[in-house]
Image 1 (cartoon, helix red, strand yellow):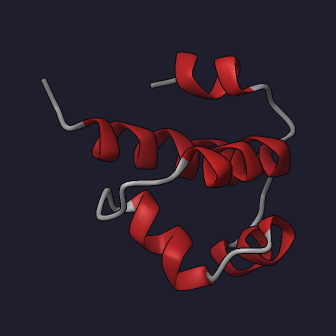
Image 2: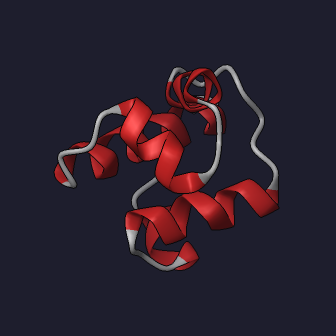
Length: 70
């Protein structure tokens, strides 16, 4: 099975794309750095629960919906 970080990053990129937001716009909205968002989307980051919650809020979805897409 593919690494959870890769699957999470792919799901995040897909959801962000559906909102029509660039990484930079999304990062600003989340209050996180753009390079950190890029690292998450490439599966290079092991994201904390606090930041996962920030990401879900910025995507306007619940945590369960975000994880369902993985």
